[in-house]
Amino acid sequence: MNLDFSIFTDNWPDILGGLWLTLELWLGGSVLGMVLGLTIATVRQYAGGVVQRGIAAYVAAFRGTPFLIQLFLLYYGGPSFGLVLTPVQAGLVGMTVYSSAQFIEIFRAGFQSIPPGQIEAARMSGLGRMQILIHVQLPQMMIIILPSMVNLYVIMTKETALLSVIAIPDLTAVLNGIGSATYAYAETLFALAAFYWILLECVTAAGRWAERKVGRYLVR
Amino acid sequence: MSSLLSEALPVFIKGLEATIFFSFGSVVVGFFMAVALCTMRLSKSTVLSSIAAVYVSFFRGIPLMVQLLISFYCLPVVGINVSPGVSALFTMAACTAAYMAEILRGGFLGIPYGQIEAAQISGLNRFQILKEIEVPQAVRLTLPSLINEVVNMVKASSLISVVGVLDLTRAAQNVAASTYKPLSVYLTAGILYLAVTSSIGALEAVARRSLKTERQG
Image 1 (cartoon, rainbow over the protein chains, first blue to last red):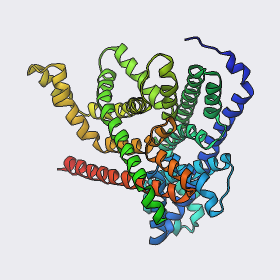
Image 2 (image 1 turned 45 degrees about the horizontal axis):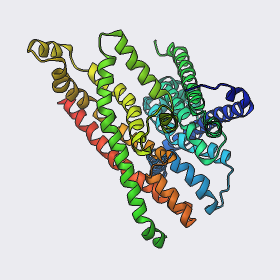
Image 3 (image 1 turned 90 degrees about the vertical axis):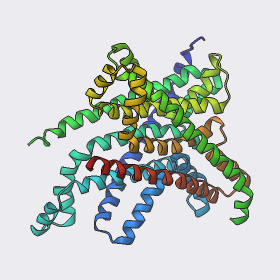
Image 4 (image 1 turned 180 degrees about the vertical axis):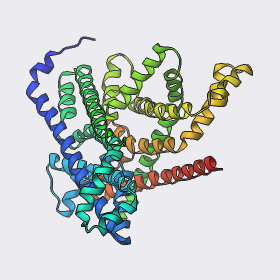
């Protein structure tokens, strides 16, 4: 087996474009999913039975089905109800919705970890719901849910590899395309594996750093 | 919708069977690999322990999609010619083994060392200790997480459609292409997946509850 590395230098602009697209969709989808998840989890706290059941069904549906099926529904099924998206838009929306369902569960556990007495005390002191969220709930639960959040960001890096299936020119699509054109599958696929491994190590290291940072506040 | 369903139903059922076969099959094969990995990881030999650690880190660190592409395109290059189904099954097994090894490690560490010493003194060999004492208890302790791994593999198995295995996702793609009704076809596939994952999820809840009562009682 001869390894040919000129395929990387020859196709460098495409590879770089795919790499950026993968990183953008990963970070964009996960951050938007985190914001959506926090919003829904906050609403859930104050909502009545019907809304709560609706949110539970949303979480069950998106956590219980493969991400690939969700992408197909959005990209190929969307036009049937007037939602026409480009592949990249569908990818971003898909990543956001899929991760939001997981983030809701994480934030729910976070909210539950805070003693209800504190919320009552805050309410008695005249704080509004938004103030309670920002000053009482979020700072405390962040410390507790940080490991699960980092873990979810790690999981989402791996989900980006699926985006190539709906014709998004991400790193997986670009490298696999080069592999098909030149038969240099070994070089391209192992480069892809190396990219994901390095990305995962970076995210994990960043997570450890953040945990050390906030861990100080845990020790009283 | 109804005519679509009656025509496509056999295709969906065939795909669903394959999805169940591949996800459960990979978990069964992966379980034995996971026990081996876990024994290596916890052994006194630094070499064995490092090999297992690198294996786990590799297979958990790289998307299953990339692993499937590697085995689909690269195995023939090195002269291993197997059908897409066989390579998909073993790639899934290799991947889930890494996750299950990490789950089981917690269970193995939960067994008091005195039990192993007592078994050694009673004359049991290493394999007997593993089979009779360690594995049953480790599985008991980690059953909810192991069942959750089955749910993950049911969902992850949709990726084998990309390397040409006819599973539920691939069946849905075929039906969608021939009927031009992607919305109802993918919704049906989604509901079928949800039926499988929520049934297994219910088992997980039972396992979690019985483990809790066992610990209290």
